[in-house]
Amino acid sequence: MNINKLGVRVTKFGEKFKDSALKTTGNWKIDAQIRELQNEITDAYRILGFAYYEKMKTDDPAVRDNFSVKSKNLIDEIDNKSNQLTTLVESKTLLVQKRCNQCSKEVPDDSLFCPYCGASCKESAVDE
Ligand SMILES: [Zn+2]
Image (cartoon, rainbow, N blue to C red; front, side, top):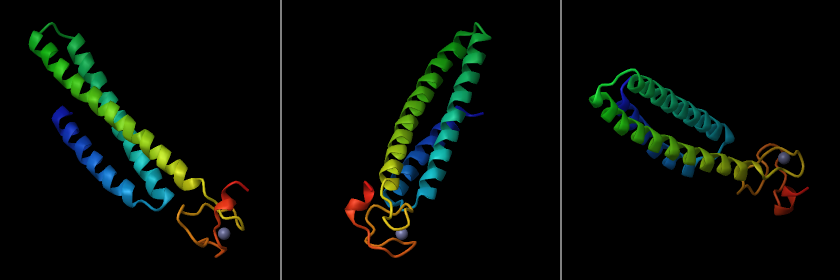
């Protein structure tokens, strides 16, 4: 697997994430983004583990130097994506906290009327 390719993929994902997070209206979209992000993080861990394995297998200083660079990039990416994941989970929590006071279905935070039953959505519905 190519570490540089991963870096490009991760950066692209970060940009896509930023745009779509702003536009997201449905929970299913956020769930899909969360799954994608979790997969990306898992991939980065796997590549990091493999690079570490390659480093430990050899005394070649070039491989060891290369690992230092690779691992720093991967660790940065993992930290970056973990932060994105936290933001995403938080924004999902914000989205799901509002519920219809008639049918109890989750409604978007800025809804005036419930998209399921048409009831008016008042702020007081959140705590009831
Ligand atoms: Zn409703």
